[in-house]
Length: 237
Image 1 (tube, helix red, strand yellow):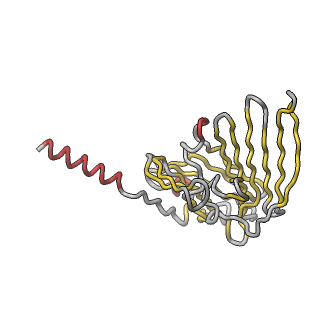
Image 2 (cartoon, one colour):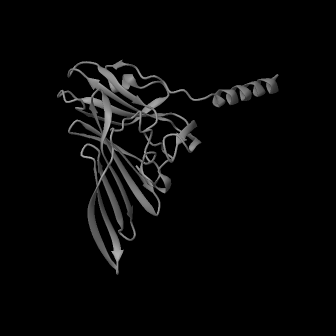
């Protein structure tokens, strides 16, 4: 009898973990951040600030599931090179508040954009604290190994959607001091590149600008996750 029960629980456990992972639908309203968080999830980053230019502080949350599950993640671009990985899923949630004492109402739930804990390379978890300035939410990541990278994406709520306004892709080699800083302004449609290289034993810097040909601003729906937007051949953001 004991052997049968053990086999039953082993099979049940295997079947349970083999099921496709389903993200929860976050509540439309909530009086506080804690009441928004579903069971088995926790807040790993949060920030408060005005995100829709009404002089009332809104909130942005990054939630993480309590255990690793199988996830299909995009690498290379939004549709190809889909890789299945075992990792803890994350959710970005943004809630607007209508009044100082009012409830929060969800603006967006995104299950893809936030990098997971194992997607930072040798540096570990790539997630860095969010920030809010000028009604823009900036999401930040850092990772890499010999060459390290920092990514910043600033989204702004306009025309009833979250648009990517600016971005920054900064790569650096800690030992040599070499850097490559690409600053993107998608509203002005231009890119500034600031780089420093070793030339005859001396660290030399140069700055130049290039036009961009971006006709439509990217949103959370059209920009799946970091490193999947190929702006020009072999240049990913």
